[in-house]
Length: 257
Image (tube, rainbow, N blue to C red; front, side, top):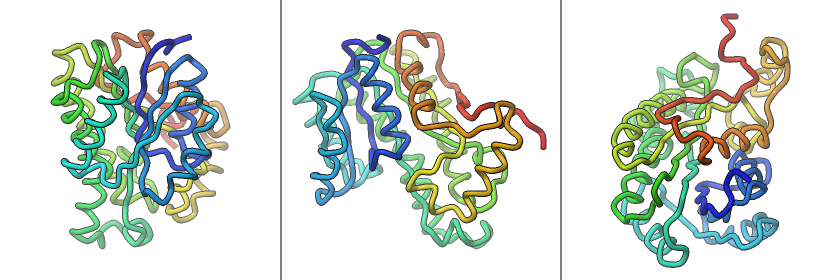
C-alpha cells in the first residue's frame, strides 16, 4: 500500500460528496492513518459519523484556516496528540455567493480579499505553521486542490479563479522554499464534480455536460479518482514531483474548443 504507516492531515472535510472525502477514502485504503480538520463545533457529531469508517482517525475543529493563531493552536494540539505527520491535504476554499453570481468586474474589495485569504493564503499559512512547529516528517508532501478556472475563463467562477491562480503560484514558490528540506508541494486540478461547493456556481450542470462532450475520455471525474491522484502525490511513488499542477480531469484541459 502506498501510504502504509503514514499519517496524513486532511483539512476541510465537509461531507461524503466532497473531494476531501474522496482523498480520505483513497489514502485510508492505501494504509494511511488519518487526521482531519473541519469547521464548526456544531458539526462535531456529523463529522465524527462521517469519518467513522476510517478506523483510528481523529478530527479537530478549525474555524479559521487563514487565521494565524487559530491554525497554530490547532496544529500544536495535533502534533502533541499524534506526533509528526507525513502529509497535508488542503481542501479549503470559499468565495461570497454574490461574487460568483455577478460579473467579475463587480467583485467587491472585501469579496476579493475574502476569496484569496481563505482559498490561497490559508495554504501558505498552513505550510509555514507546519514548518515552524517542526510538524512534518522527512520527505513529507503537501497537496492542495485547484481548478481549470485558474487559467481559463469559466462562467460564474469569477473571483475564485483569481484565488486559485494565486494558490497555484503559491504552490510553485512553496515548493522552492520547502524543497530545501526535502518537502514536496503540489496541487491537483480536479475536473468539475457535484460537490456542495459547486452548488454556488451558476448553471454548474452545463459545465458537466460540456466535459462529457469535449474531454478526451468523454466523462466526468469522480472524487475517488481525484483522491487516487492525491494519494500518489502524497506517496513515495512521486518523490521527484514537486511544484506541479497535476490535472485530474479526463484530459479536458488539453482541448482548444
